[in-house]
Length: 137
Image (cartoon, rainbow, N blue to C red; front, side, top):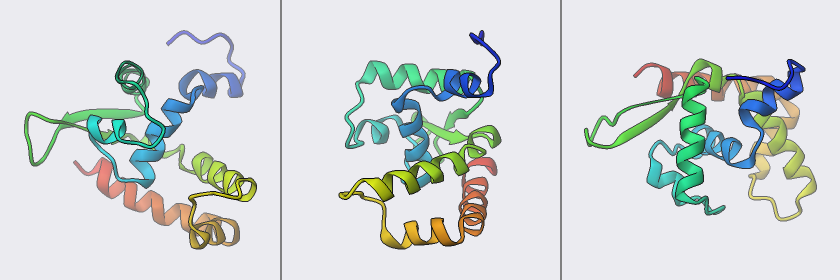
């Protein structure tokens, strides 16, 4: 991937610079979605062309992998890589920020309380779950 500059913020934005990529990561991390049609069903209503493009980009950048589904062999199952799981703290911070400023937030009060009071422990618990579900396949 050719990047415009090697500023750390730019480099990160080159990989995750649009909402769709971050929402796909959200769905993989927090909503246990693993299949194309599940991503399409998200409330934000991504188009099929944008979804396909972002999944391809995330795969090319080694953030996710695609493989055979355990149940239905003809269906593709997406998984986070270690590189993708390392975005977890960033997404947790976004949830905290959005949960604090959005008075209609969908983030649970318990989650927000845990994320603000014991962030490191919460992240370690989620990371452990993600590693088990996504990396052990």
